[in-house]
Image 1 (cartoon, rainbow, N blue to C red):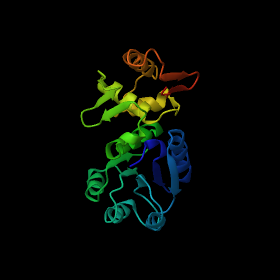
Image 2 (image 1 turned 135 degrees about the vertical axis):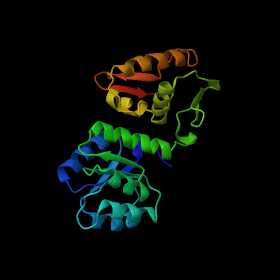
Image 3 (image 1 turned 135 degrees about the horizontal axis):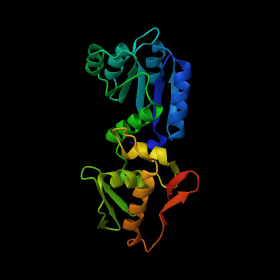
Image 4 (image 1 turned 120 degrees about the horizontal axis):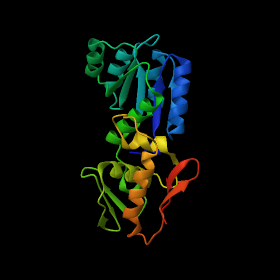
Amino acid sequence: MISTAIAHVLIVEDERKLAKVLEEYLTSANYQTHCLYSGDQVMPWLEGNNTDLIILDLMLPKVDGISLCAQIRQQSKVPILLATARVTEEDRLLGWQQGADDYVCKPYSMREMVARVTAMLRRVQPLPQAQLAQPFQVDMQKMQIHARGTLLQLTAVEFRLLNHLISHPQVIFSRDQLLDVIYDDYRYVSNRTIDSHIKNLRKKLTSLFHGDEMIQSIYGVGYKFSPQ
């Protein structure tokens, strides 16, 4: 299992402009991507390549998305996010029956799509302890983080935020990217909300690390975690 910082997303979308815009958003969120524009390209590509998540349009030339979903499920458990303008209950149910993991209707928000990808990968690919910045230990099941053997008293939002930061040391994240990490329900909140959560996390870390500012502000960009 790998960090979402290097996770790969396969985009299968025949609307090339839409695919390219989505690719740009995912790349800016630290994902690797590849685009395919026709249904008949998918299975041959998967035979020679690996991906961590597939965004799959239903209305594709040559082979439709529902058929592809069923074929992929016969050989892989890779998460599949269906994207389509078809919004009937029958279509959605058919997608679930063929093994889809999530479903989003067009037109969709690019920010919401990135958030869905992040949430899906977080569920299926918890980060191994060896990749965490030391000296932190994370218990994903209990949503707990220990620092130098001390249990940090964190809210659910603070847990998601700190876990993401310590899982990606030295990686700079914008406020919008961090909002996508901590909120799964795509609510509208000011990106300055992140500043408040960062302030609280810094207070909780200060006493353990003798005042070292491990969460650093990057002027005009956002934040990064820099272990001492």
